[in-house]
Each structure stands twice: as C-alpha cells, then as structure tokens.
Length: 308
Image (cartoon, helix red, strand yellow):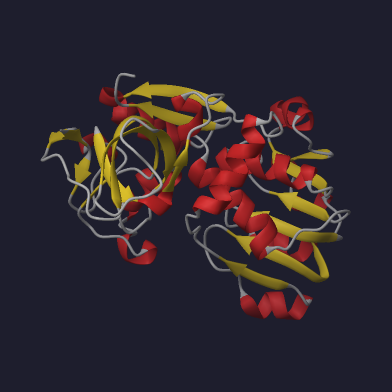
C-alpha cells in the first residue's frame, strides 16, 4: 500500500509517498481503507522540529492522525464494527498512521460516520474538535456567562472552540485578524479582537483563556484572579500564574470515542459547523504541509487519499 512514512527529523520538501506492506488488524483492531485524512500542525512540526520526545512519539512512523474511511476487516474480538461500515476518528500520537491507503486502529478510536457528513468533512473533525471540547469543558470547566478569550479563533481548533463556547452560553472574545470578524461573529463570537492591535487593548477580566499560540506572557495577565488558563503548546510560567492567582497549565489531547460521538451528534443535527479550507490530493503532501505550516488557514485542511 502507499503511505507517507518517515524515519526521523526531515525537511518538508523531502517527505515522499512510499510503498509499504498493508497491515492486518489484531484481535481488538479494525482495518480501515482511508478516504480522507485531516492535516494538523503536529504533522509538520514533529519531523521539522524534532519534537518526537516532547510529544511521546516514535521517530519512525506513518504520518497522520485524523481519518475517515470504510472498514475493510475486523479483528476476532471486535464487536462494534463490521466490514463496510463508514467510520471516522483520530489515532493516538504515539501510533499515528492515517496518511496511508489503510490503517489499523483499536476499535475504541473510531465511531460510525453519519450519512450527513462527507468523508472530507468527517476527517476534519476528530483532533481539532476533541481538543477544543477537552480544553473548554474538561480543563477550563467553562460555564454559562463566563468570559473566554480564544486564540487563533479562525484555525482548526479555534473554530470549534468558538462554536462550542457560544453553545455553552459563554461570552466569547475571538482573537484573529480583522478580515475574519464577520465570519467569526456568524459562528457565535461576541467580539473579535485583531491580534495586530496588541493585547494591552484588552481588559483583564477574563474567566478563561484558551491559548494555542504560546502567548502566556501577554494573556495570563488578562485572566482575573481565580480564573483559568490552558495552553495547547508550551507550559505557562507557574510563578507568574501564581502571582496573578490564576490556575494555568497545558495539555495534549487524548482521543475519546465518547467525546467524538458527542461532536458527531451535534454536527449531524446542524448544531455545529465544520469549516473546510483546502482539500489536497495524496500526491500533493509537500504542498499541503507547507500550506498548513504557513498558519493562515480558515478552518481545516484535508488530504484526499482513496477513491470512494
């Protein structure tokens, strides 16, 4: 089968599709024929910056976390799926593999794809959607009426976070460029702050901050005493957080089929919108990763791998 396999630090320009052996599912695993895969920052950051140890990843692996496709085969002890089921999900960071024609995964990492979702749309949801959900409700414990600042609000995680925070009844201040103001307000942002204006223009009365751009030095000071801050990247300065009376930390998402099912239900019911930016062909992997690296996407980028 064709797959994008790397064996350590590598420049994006040198990433290539390789021919490798098709995997077989173990007892609790399913084999999925991949139709589409979501592209995430980790896909270019880990090999380019040699972040394998930081992220707990092996240095030799098939790239890609998010996937959608059809079950090709099931292990002897699989109970939740059968051959032919349309599924989607995200793989663990320590065992990726969705940038390939086939992937094996534990059955707990996938859910059935609703008919309302295309394979491309489904592949855009898992990592970004679950990260936003986990950050807001499991790390920040966001509640109705609270003020939250959401960084990179027009990106993959940010767009889910804006919508989910709005649905929870929070007052959402979305950080993005001015060109995205109308777009983000249509998704539920109460205010859109142009990051080019400098954070000193913001008031220091936020109950929570969701930071995906390592802005702790500026945005921790915007959280009121007793408030919460969570980063998707580097750990914040704990001495600074303590001096401000703010609870602060960082995390890497953990895939959860229960969490993904809740997202799926919202999307299928028309209560959560999935925003796609660009769709790249499998052979365009270098262009796709460079586009993701540039950081100007409005929504999710997708890699189309197999024919449906």
